[in-house]
Image (tube, rainbow, N blue to C red; front, top):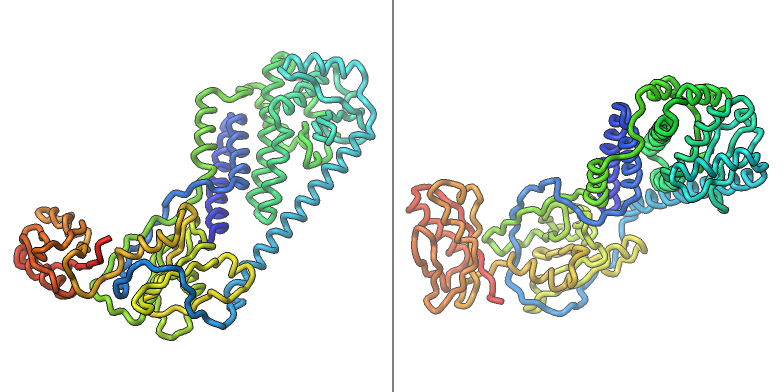
Length: 518
C-alpha cells in the first residue's frame, strides 16, 4: 500500500471501532464516556501516523541473488529513454486531486457559514439585563470565568452557543423566553453554559476538519450526528445535577423547544434539534454522571496516546537465499515493501516503477530514496539513488531504469539515515559467493521446522556466521568440522546435507552461503 492508503485504511478501521464503542456506551447510559470515544474517533481521522505496528503477516520468500560485490560509489546507470506509462500513475494523481478539491470546497463552505453566522449574530439585539445578570451568576456557579454575551433573535431557532471572530455568543429565541417559566429558563441557560464548560464549541472545529478531510465518507457524518446527540445528553446531565428539583421544568423547556427548532447551524452547539425527546426526558429521571471518573480519563488517555497515532502495516517478511548464484532471469525488490519479490526481467521492459508496483511499498517507505544495486558493473557494484516520489509527481523518466537480471531494488525507510549504506548492508548478506575462500564468512539457511524438532535444536548454530580460518573448516553440529575451503557453495551445501542426512537418516535441505568478511 502507499502511505496515504495505509493511513486512511487504518484510520477508518480505528475510527469505526471507537465510534461504535461510543455509540454503545452512550446507549447504555454513559453519554460522557460515549461522547469522548466518538470525539476520539473524529480525532483519529485527522491524526497523522507517528508509528506503525505489524498486523498483517507476509509469506516467507526464497530469492537467489547474483554474484558477490563490494560497496561502490553512486554512479549513473544507463537509463531507459521511454516515458512513464500514464495509466500506471495517473489514476492516483486524479484521485488525490479530486480528494484535495473536495477538501478545499468543504473548508470554503464551512468557513463561509462560520462568517455568515457571525455577521447574523452581531446584528442581533443584546439580551435583557436580567438574563445577563443571571448568566453571570450561573457561569460562576459552573466554574466559568465569564459568561458568553447573550443575544436575542426573533427567528424560530433553538438556543445555541455560537463561536464568532469576537468570541462566544449565546443566542436565545425571544419566543421561547416569553413562554418559559423563570425556572425553566434557568435550566435552559445552564444547559447552554454546560456546552461552554465542556468545550463543545471547540469540538465543532474538530468536526469541520474531519468532514473536510473525509467529505466523501458516510462514517464521518454518522459520527458527527452521534457526537451532537451525546452532547445534548451530557448537558442534560449537567442540568439534572445542578437543579435536581427542576427536572419537570427542564422537560417543559425541551417540549417547548421542539415547537421552535430549526436546524442548528454547523458551527454552533445548542439545545436542539430535539430528535429523541422521549429518551432525554426518561434520562432526566435517572441522570448519568456529568463528568468522567479518573479511571475513565486514564483509559481515554491511553487510547489517545497509544491508538490514534498508529498505522497498521505488514510485518517484515522472512527472506531465505537459495544457493545458486547464477540467476539470469530475475531482479529483486526488498526493504520497505509488503513482500520481498523476485521479478522476471528477461523481457527487457521491466522498470523500477514496475518492480515497486509489484512489491507494494509499506507505510514507512521513503519512496524519495530508493536504491538500485547492480551487482556486476566492470567488476564492482553500482548503487544508484532514485527519487520515485518526484518521478511520480513530475512524470520525469531519467531514472526509471530498465532492470537487468540480478538487480536489487532497495526501498529505504523514513528511519534510514543513510539509505545507500543501509542498502549495501542489507543486500550484502544476501549475495552468495560462488567459491568459498579463507577469510570468508559462511553461514547456512536452515528451515525453521528442522530446528523445532526434538534432538535437532543445535542446527540453529548453523545460522551464525563462521569465519573460514587457516584450517579452511566450519563446525557443523552433530557432525564436527568439515573442510569447505575451495568448494563452491553448491558443493558445500551438498556436503553438509549428505553428512547431516547420514546422522539423522533423513533428507535435509540446508543451504550454504558465503560472503567476503567485512
